[in-house]
Image (tube, rainbow, N blue to C red; front, top):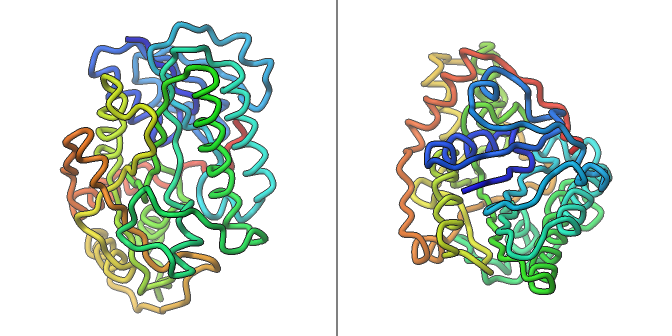
Length: 324
C-alpha cells in the first residue's frame, strides 16, 4: 500500500508514518518544515520526504498520483499560534485543503484532520451535550474571536471535503481529533506547556482554567483510530471522533499529575482560563467503537509520564506557526 501524508513531518504525521511503515506500507511525507521539524526523529523513518509549500498550487505538479491513501494533516494548530495570527490560520488551512482537493484524483482515499474545536460555540452556549456525539449542530459563538479562526477553517474544510468528495468520487474520512497529546507535539499545547514550566521549576506555578475539563488522548491511541478508520473503507463517508473518553480530567488535576511526574512542588497560583476557552470537552466515541472496535490503551498517567520524559530529554522544540 502506498500512503501520502501531507504535513507528515509534524506531530501526528510522524507517529502515523511510523505506524504505517510498521504495517508494511510505503510512505511519502510532504511538509515545508516550518513547524514539522526536519530532525533525527524524521531522519530515522524509512519514508520519502518532499519539501513543498502546499499553499502554492504549483507545488502539486511535483507530487505524483497513484496513492492508496492520502492523509491531510497540514494546518496551523495550537491556540497560541492561531491567536497570534488568526487571518493566517484561515488562509493557510483553507488554501492547503482547496489545493489538495483540486489535485486529488477519483478513487484516492482521503483522510482529513478536523477538530473538536467545531463544538466550542455550541458547548459554551449550552446547546451541545458533553460527552458530544458527531450529530449535534455546529455553531460559532463569536465569529470575531481570534480563537475561533481555527475551528471555522476546519468547518469549511469539512464541507469542502464532503461536497468535493461526492462530486469527484473521492472516498473520504473526516476525523475530529480531541485533545491529542504526546512526544514531539511542540510547546503551544497544555500538556507540554505545563511540563516545560515544571521542568524549569517555575515557582510560584500559574494554573490557568483549573476547573475546566478535558479528555486527553495519547497520540498512539489516536493513530490507532486513524489507521482503523482508513482500513478497508470502514469509515468512508463518515465524520468520526478520535479521542479517549475513559479518563476525563480537570486541568487542576492534570497539573498536579505533571508536577508529581517532574518531582516539582511549587506554590500554585490560579488564574482564569484564556478567553473563549470551552469549559468542558469530551467525545462520545460510540461511532468510532462501532466501526472499528477501538479501545484506547494508554492511560493518562502513563501517557503523561511518557510525554514528560520526552520533553525532559529533548527540551522545547521549535514551535513556529506552520506555513504549509
